[in-house]
Image (cartoon, rainbow, N blue to C red; front, side):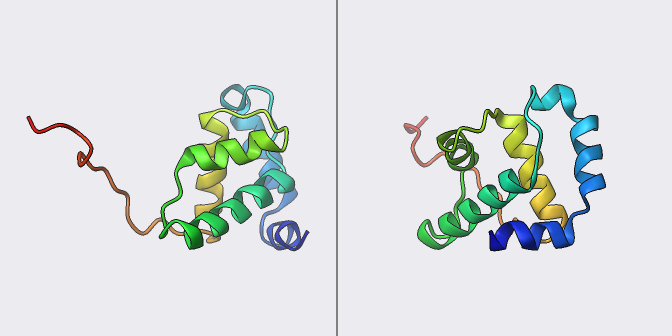
Length: 104
């Protein structure tokens, strides 16, 4: 509830409505709302603390699906971008690694 209130006080409903309209095709019938954003934000917060700052997109997606929210990669991507845009989360290091690949 607190996360939703925080999001509502920082992201205008009209902005969210416009974002849904512009991305309607990418969202495949899912409309972003404050509940989805709050759930994603709380998942980020939990994972940042419990996974040394790493938050894979699949963990956000699975959490949304767990609560019955139909989503795809675009839903997670747009949600993440929105949370970054409004300063709720900060991407400090994008990592790519080949540590699990056999030596070439």
